[in-house]
Length: 184
Image (cartoon, rainbow, N blue to C red):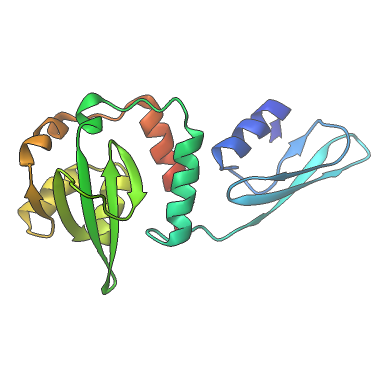
């Protein structure tokens, strides 16, 4: 596979390089650090460069490292467009994760670690439901979990009604896919 310098930069900026080896037409030597891969470019006599990568382990869902990466990616997504229905609701979420609980919130459409005071809705659910909804973008799991009594809700439910027809904006989907790509 041959890539341009721009394509490599875009792959690096997205935090995902699709294969672990590429050939490039770039003279010289570069060292690039992406979110998931350390990549070394080694020059060949032909002027092509081979990329050799070593994968770093992905942060485990709901770990401190995962929240730090999510926060970093969210801040980098400066032009994040969040629909009004999502901006207008604050949800404290308690996730049951292997016998422990993790406190997090969705504050105006942004995932954050810890609860916030005066949230509109308090919600609790198992980690697999939170992973499917927040990281994989499968909102149908929410209704299934609520019907199966795996997801518990309290607070101002009227704030959640507009979210039934919620659809991610392009920038939200791009950020969610980035988060999914780094989630172990």
